[in-house]
Length: 141
Image (cartoon, rainbow, N blue to C red; front, side, top):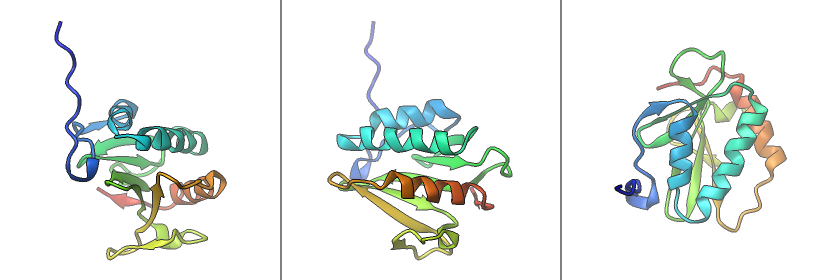
């Protein structure tokens, strides 16, 4: 029996995962994240699921997306992307969060939060951003 192939890692170590809706493709992406990033995001993925019961998940453009259960179709409040040294978390309506996530974007209202290997993520503050973001309209993608 042939061994399942490991996902290809694109530049920066971002896993190439087939586009799909639901938790399964997101879990495949998390499993394929290199090194410390897999465990770090698995913890935050579980936090998002706890804070937003019924959260919608998908992988598009090799990035997991998270949407509120009652949001319009294809509207998302958060996505992530792997880079060599960190995980980039994008809050699409991030300028409306209080406090505003620390990293500015060149595009509209998006704000970023970067997770580095040595970071002790304040999960309470992250959960607060997730709760706030989940009730905003989100980004159509």
